[in-house]
Image (cartoon, rainbow, N blue to C red; front, side, top):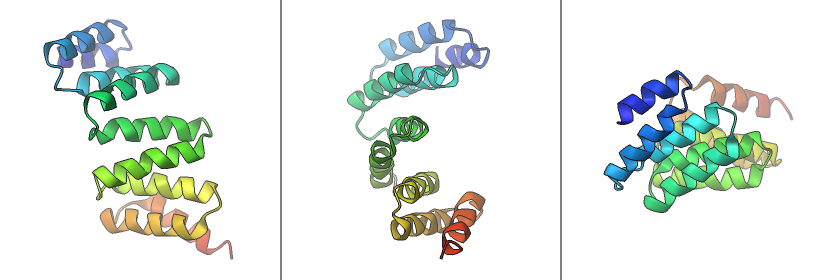
Length: 146
């Protein structure tokens, strides 16, 4: 059901939602279908619906860091920087080697004017992913602001 839902989602067909719902009903221990519904909504520029699905995924599995990350990403786009920062904090706590979470947390720190914390997060992102060009550029950008 998830695979069919994913196929319909790539076609932007709302039938994907039914497949994801049925997949979750068939196995409520697997929250990926809820996350997939959230991604569907996010790609359709429906951020509030997406956040609702991510909240449901988190309610069923507090350790499902992809839902926290996706929520943080939406909040960052909505200029809810402190709330986004909190989401990325959670991701780094659950998955302490997630370079993208450290980069995005660093971005939040930078936007909040916390240069030292931002540099630490960007460096941590580079520690976990040496090819993270965004983190490398951010470090250079912040060091050149002096």
